Length: 252
Image (cartoon, rainbow, N blue to C red):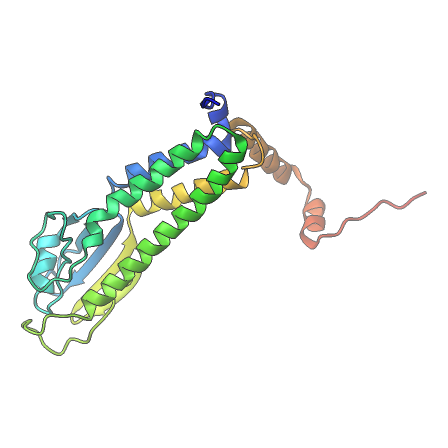
């Protein structure tokens, strides 16, 4: 039996179209930073240092200034091993070879979504949507756990030959504030990370609609109708919906 590719009309269905959009977002996310850090240091009283880290070995922003500050406590940017980064790698830096493989993970997840979208039958499409969602969540869960472990490892392997001694080991968080010596840092997700989160959300929606042939237009119409019914509902109607009860009119 020969393979019959889906028609263009079928890609208007959420269960086929959304995995394609998610794939595009995963690939596009590689262009943008995944993680950002704002740093306040007494050595730079009139400015906030900023770092952007990508899914591949690249750091942009004030990475030279930050490297100068970090060397005093023996905290160094990681060594990606397989890919020459745009920053100087210290000989005492922790090896993080998986950083070089980051783009492969994003491309693989994107390719999986595109492959699922062209499934020849609905049965294979539904099975593919299930595997794609579970696989994507697993991949990114492992990535986040690995990043947090590497942050712990780097912060707990400070160079004993560093000029400043007595700095307690620490673990920079993925999101949040932390202080080391006289440096205060604020970590946050970057644009690329948010794009990846949106892409995963699209896969969740595609999985939710796996048993229907709902399209983008029908879904948009359904949302508009629901919003319209909420706006036009009277206060008493909303009160009835809120407490889960309804009032039946009395019979003559």
